[in-house]
Length: 495
Image (cartoon, rainbow, N blue to C red; front, top):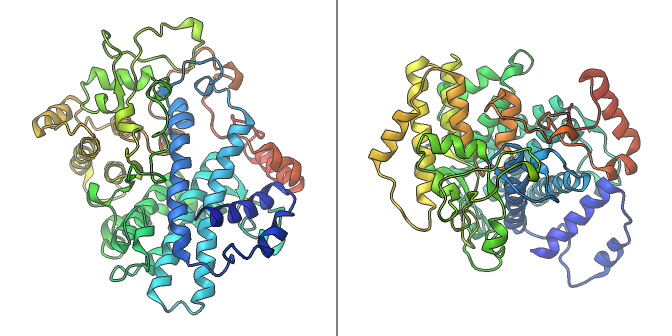
């Protein structure tokens, strides 16, 4: 598993950084390594899910958490919450997303070679999974960087080490096409040859199909402000109302795209080996903590833990260390989030319900305000029940407690209310809260006084890796010129 990962990751590194290729001679003459095209597609699936999800989880805790004021690391050398982000961090985010998108693409190509006429259900399902996961990783790259290499991005085996940058619009068109094709491919009556390699659904294709179409909804929603260009409203309505049998989506927390770690090496949570003291150097951010504490949110003690002899207390984001009182600050909950077997979700049922709520509110699907309120209540409830289910202490959150909380945050007919509670529910879910913030402007975040390095503006994107600008300069500058012309900005965190 590890050898295959590094072979493909190495190819990817060459593709995007124009590194030397001397390692391929060793690979080609090493009789102890599997041939790149002889392995089974399912041999890649475990790595695509496991290592890709781990990379997403680590960025969730740090980068997304600090930008979206879920967490603050009160250390002078970590200043993401003050928008001080080195290019090495931007590059590692870029590299990890492309590595796992490339592995998904390679999984698809393996299926093409082994079943060129696309007649075998085994390979059709593998093709579909590959398309779903490729869309997941590439969408994050497009959301984070804007225009990115895509149509040429996976052609290093053909000798193309300088891929063009596709427009974000063209990338998204193909992402939607990938998910449409995957939906048509999934054969829910069949599984895959090695279901144990499927760490999300153990070979259950009906759940993969729901995940695919739930992602479809996520991405269509991302484009909902561009309906005139992309005609996404009608597709949302088709998925949620007109053709639900063809496009099943998450129907309960049992469908969540959650990686349940075994807790036994190597399948452990990426923070499992991090000590309690090191993990909890990450503090609760004042923004989310105050929002949850004032409403007595039952999830608060699952997200965070109090410091002894202190009440709930968050650290302001975007401020200098010497300007804040950090005594008695609440910390992230290691037991729930960072134990060896703590699960990690890349998409959950509550997100689908919040999408339905927003679409009903806006009249894209039937239901109006009454329907929006119902979806809203169900979304909040689903989020709480999910966190109750993954609590290793097995504390019960009663229906009465949930009902009382829903009354305290009851639907008031505003988008702000929907987006604020969606923000709470998206804690620890990839970069999704940041993506949503840039789409909606919610939640209203207080920008700290020490964020001048990015002009007191929450980053709207990350800059391209320096290695990309140096090894693929012509295509890089084409992309930057497009940003300057169309978006009136440059390759920075303000465009």
